[in-house]
Amino acid sequence: MTRLPSTALIFSTALSMSLAGCTTVPTNDNESEGSSASELEAIQVAIDGLKTDIQELSDKVDALPGQVGIAKSSGKKAPSASPEDEAKGKELATQITDHIKKGEMAQAKKVMDSLKKKYPTTSAYKALQRRTAPELAVIGKAVSHEAVSSHIEEWYVDGAADLDSGTTLVVFWEIWCPHCKREMPELIDLYNARKGQGLKILGLTRLTKSATEEKVKAFIAENKLIYPIAKENGKVAPIFNVSGIPAAAVVQDGKIIWRGHPNNIS
View 1 (tube, rainbow, N blue to C red):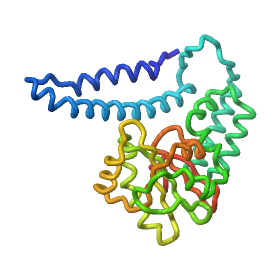
View 2: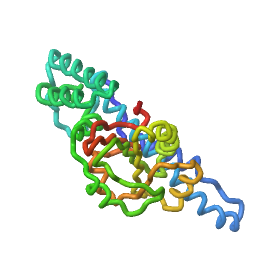
View 3: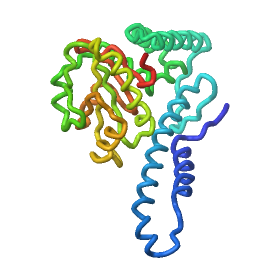
């Protein structure tokens, strides 16, 4: 059995390394006063970036139980599945992955329901619980214009949250997230290519952690983001089962038909 380090240990080690790399020793008092603010900002950015990377690492660790033994901290032995059930569970999990890759989210959801009902103690089922299962759970869920627009506090790029008709790609992001900062500009080409066919894009942020309106506006201007972007009050993300960012959803005629990572959009 291979024992993997806990996420807390990974974060603690990475954070210590980051702080060591970000901290400098000033040569005089004037330099100390002038650099303290920038040092704190650099440290905060490093911490926020680490948290995002650690979330992705944690997701990868969760996907490993079928390959290695993961040590449990609860002290209680979880029910184990038979080798036969493990094999069948793995087969269904593979079907889920294949459906998702093809954009067949409704089919993937049906297979997930079957996996949950028949083989809930298998490693394959447990490995899908952090992200894949919550994403599939909202497929087919109704989302109205009112449900979203009533929670928008400010528009940074003017637009609308009309999800009742047509196709809208909703993207959840934060300015402190390096992966979000990579994905948001890449959506410009998709928007320009498809807006004539009716595609709408809506970027939503909550301004969490070190984010500020000034930073968001500067990022939008620098990257020439032209699709609607707004601040929501934190009540929209739960509608889409968003627990990590960046996250995206496709809403068609008032129903969620796709959920996943923005770079998986074809």
